[in-house]
Image (cartoon, rainbow, N blue to C red; front, top):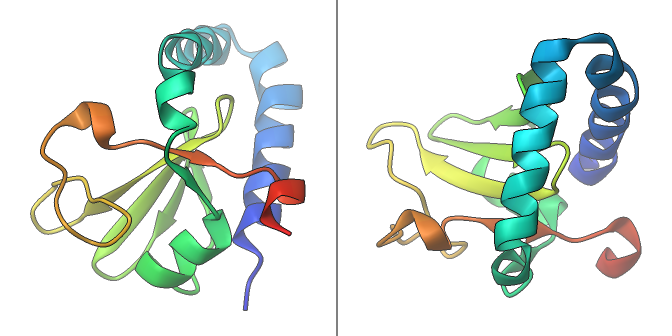
Length: 124
């Protein structure tokens, strides 16, 4: 079983520590992400997820790839989009393009489509 959380954390460290300082475009992306975090973080914290479990459920075996400010775990039917600066994730059905609840039901609105990724120490 792959450790998706460790892979995500390494990508976040790389993106935040090396990509952002060297790219104006990525500094802007980073700031927009941090602004979303300031605005919505308290709501996201109400919906925390273990990234390993999320990936195992919706995109088993997926290895994350950086796309802009996101790490994408691309599975057969679903993809998990994890924000690198702000530590939240969303699950999308690739066929319908709809966002999912953790249990696999479709979200009714985008406001509830985000889950705060547990820190490694919180996962134990």
